[in-house]
Image (tube, rainbow, N blue to C red; front, side, top):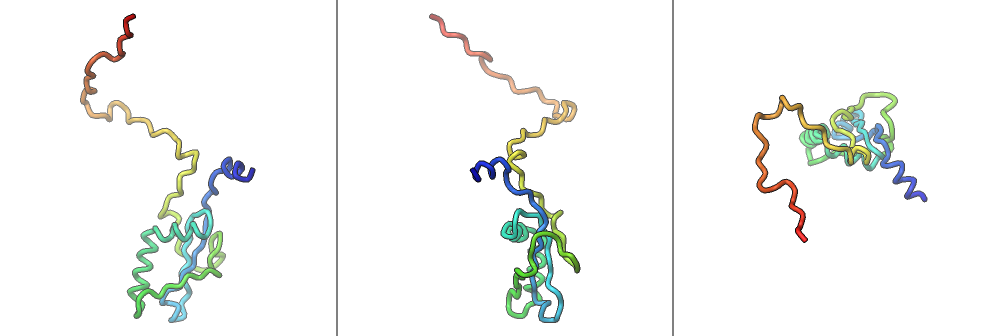
Length: 137
């Protein structure tokens, strides 16, 4: 019964999630960095963030500032559904597109461009008859 309901409802609609990561700046007393992504849950949010160019740039900068390799710590107590209620955060929701829903996954392809935009080449000629002849008895 629950499987049928889950199938009918489809995947959850992506919503905002905040993931907070502390880099080497925490040793200087600076606040950690919070990233906001659209995702289905916190695990999905981590997967989404890991694939974004902004995350990779932030990570490379953090590693470059660290004296002994990657000095990056995930802050689960500051990661949650929604956007932060206060303070600065990096909103990367516009950097990724939501996954297609099942309804969109089966959508037909877009129509061809109008005829005046197509190249002026004739269609290929077919060889042989268009319809096979009926067998004779």
